[in-house]
Length: 408
Image (cartoon, rainbow, N blue to C red; front, side, top):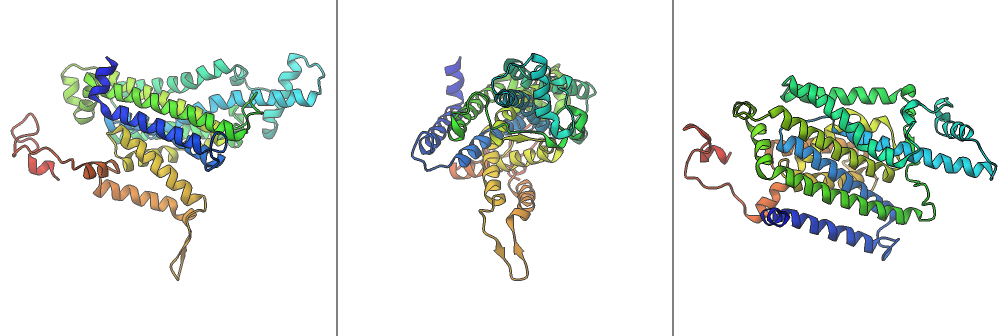
């Protein structure tokens, strides 16, 4: 079955091969395992970029194939980061407390109080909130990485889809959900340190001797593996009958419902699946970033995500990956001070300040003049053209889309 799927979808093998080659090349060029030509900070940037490509896959699945413009998927991304960040902070604080005790025995209660003071002293608290009850267990927090965002997506999706909310109204609801979550996390009494967020996540407990250079490569491997598996899972989802029903719901939901398909069930499944993918991406991203705060969950982040997918070319999995990678790396170049200022005589353009304007303008131009995004360039280079049908109808009715209209 797997061989049959891969033979019908050669792009999957091509993508996985290129991803493996990219990962091997960066490893060989890194300063931990290779020629010391790629810095540790650059390896971290590339690892984070792979995580952003993974959430872009999720966005393309729910928007490009299912037709649901979700402006809240970064909420699931952030929740995945918060779940793993809680364990990282507890485990790291335990090491600090033990080191400061200088070998003196501590009771479990003393240890708990010392860890709570270490973590929550910055917000003026000294007790461990109830939501941290499982934070000392890595298996439990890994399970919560998918359980918490999954339950949120399942509950929200069930309420929205059973009410048959569609189009722009559904997009507004997803944005409202994200805003509500961000506002809650900004509060100090949320139990997640409010505006301070969770920090020091790059310090992996028990691996102090490894060094950040080796840890960055390990996370690069993990991110590449997650992206490869995520791409394979998304490709399987959009292929076959299930994928055909997804596209049909996107193009004509009423007709699919009339044919007897459980439209709401399909939507709920895809929405929840993509939330889980986004959460896993966040759990890998923030240990490489080192910090997470409520601003990461703000609605603007989810809007950026939609821009990445649109620029790459929605409705194509590899297009979403190209868009996320391109925008992420170009953004790093512009906002990192590497792009030279542009003197114009009367004004000097500083790209650190103007990058977001350039990104928004790119989104508008792509929407108006290149709806296929960057992936359309691949079609152009490959010489792909719309099929010539000699004016034959492209739909079920006599007056359906004709060849002349298809070229527009």
